Length: 271
Image (cartoon, rainbow, N blue to C red; front, side, top):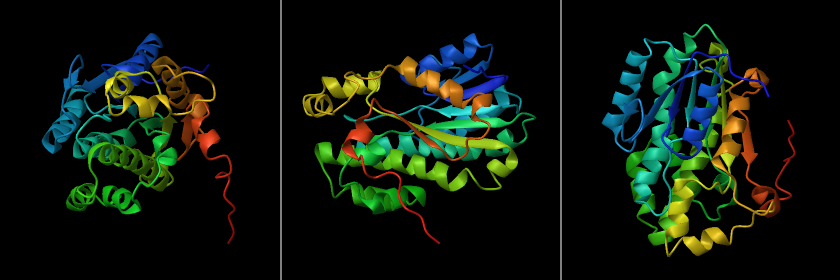
């Protein structure tokens, strides 16, 4: 496996789960990691609030003296959780930080790599409103709240989670090939894990309403993934092996997406 040569990598959600495992691997390779999280991090911030996201950006740039060689956005929340908070952390807590760091990333002397953590829920969750995803992508928070009001309980949380992770994947696809990103030496990609046994998933398993639904999710390889397994893939995506990756969404989900949607890829393309 190729290891990263970078000096400073930012990881959101660095205190637990995939973020913590990724931090451990990168630091073992000699990388300096600046973690952003609610606790046990270099920068403490609640990414569900706009002012906290802005502060995290400014403090990160200050603490790194404007030298950032890569970003991994693994901070996330999921059911059971307030649907609007799910959007705020998973979507805005990803894209606002990426946009806030972009200029600093572009000034790096290295080829910069960014991995935004999406989810296979972006493809396997049924009946996610397209207008909710578009409201995220256009930063129409009022519209997001209005659409979420049409759902309740488990349905509201499920569509909020899937929409937030779909928006992350689409942001990557839409922006990665542009002059602002690829043209500035930034390789922007995304990873879409499936059911990984993180504290977030455990919270869902422990919930009376969500637990049974999670347990019925088919995982062809037979068991939930581990944070370490996803972290190893992220490490590859942050290494020289990813020099030719741009706008990719890599599924690492134990086969769930392939089982549920065996014929949905590839799509035909014509001019």
